[in-house]
Every structure is written in C-alpha cells, then in structure tokens.
Image (cartoon, rainbow, N blue to C red; front, side):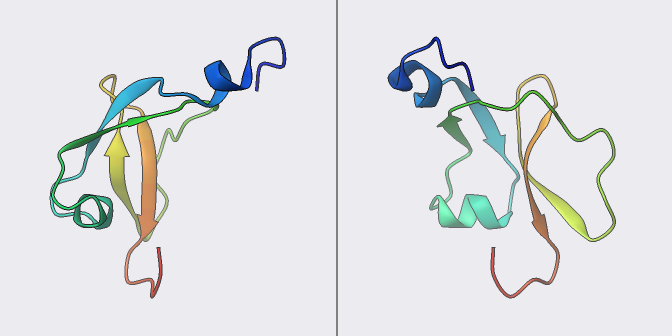
Length: 74
C-alpha cells in the first residue's frame, strides 16, 4: 500500500493481465482473455510450486494468479 495515495488510486485499475487459456479464472470470467486488475504487491513468483497452475500473468510475464490443481474450491 501507498498511504500517501488516495484509496481510488491504490485500489483502482492498474494494469491488464492475460488469463490462462482454459484456466479456472478464464471460465469464471466467461471466456474472457484478459482482465484489468489493481496492483498492490511488491513481490512475485519466481518458481511455481508443485501442484500449482498459472491462472493469470502480466504482460511482462509476472505470475499474477495461481490455483491449486485438483482443489475443490478456488
């Protein structure tokens, strides 16, 4: 968070992510290929853990969302 920024700036749309083809997020988003998201993180995933699947990524390749393969819920 950046306390000096307004809440609208902190939590408003920041950039587009690409949804993984056939992924859970794409299905939830009714087949959309991308989504505009806010961006509050300063960390990223360098190496995907076992059992995880990429659900969305930023244009620079940063993983933005993951799911657990075989999980009963998102």
